[in-house]
Image 1: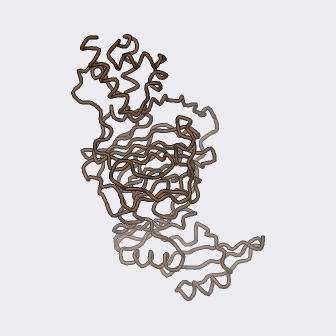
Image 2 (image 1 turned 120 degrees about the vertical axis):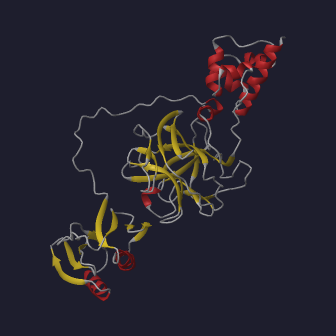
Image 3 (image 1 turned 90 degrees about the vertical axis):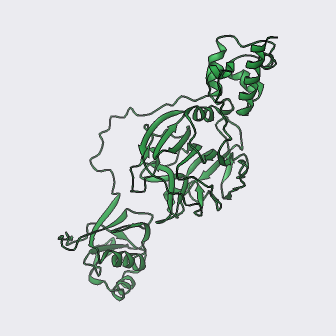
Length: 420
């Protein structure tokens, strides 16, 4: 039994246990017997030369480290400030004690096929909330999580929040969610969004890593560097963090599918650590089968995302207050000279201000229609009392239409369907 075998055997033991693998799991991954792995680890024999690169791939390390020539071993526990493995609970196994509160949800099959090993969310009301959010540095942090989109998830618009610490229109720290068919880190309109470079395939596991360091964001999906951009980060440690939804009640941000193995670090992890997390516990990547052969032409117009209105600086705040107070809008985002309002089930309303000397381009007729369930006569009285000028009530057979002008000169059209 020579010294080189002992060094290699000790390294194999350390790397295997670091990933939480058994000898049998490692043996199955390499196509050898568990007795062979046992002999390697005991220093009785050394792996065949063909197995050395395979070992390096499984462990997410280098051949030098397996031979004992590496001075920088991987430590996936270093800097770990939150860890939810979702193995039947939402306990924080990082040692920081930041346990979550599960609202609804179940535990389903994980990426290894094990029952009860992943969090299953219904896309309507299930989520995890952590009132005691992890302490993140303004200089560096990392997020690692596995996600699986259900077959019935609609991949359109902004939806499916994975991890969010987004305090409504204030304290907006981070939001890893989904835009159309792409996993996306939201820039909150201040900075560009960071998106994966391939469309989501439903019913497929994705390992997503977001890293922030030196004023740059990097995204890795399934072990591959997919996107990068410059940016900034402002931590809000008192803001609650959510898994599977936003902090608001926007229904389309509830995640429908499965999430697993969420880890957050207060440092920037390296590429070798990203790879180690991806192949952790002997995970073998499953090939993707994209269905992108359709020759249907791309439509000129896809959907209405936002409605834009222009105001002077001295009226924009008054308008935002009136729309929220009397029309039921909620403020999604607020900045100097800018408001983003929403009803949660229709396009956002963007209010922007210009200098008073600039001519405002006001529309003479409403270019959009809002739906209501209120009685049309009661609504007429309500809006009149609020200061709106009623134009007319129209009976179009299938519905009533109320045309009115708000106190800021904008014309609106509200529809109340009949009967049914």
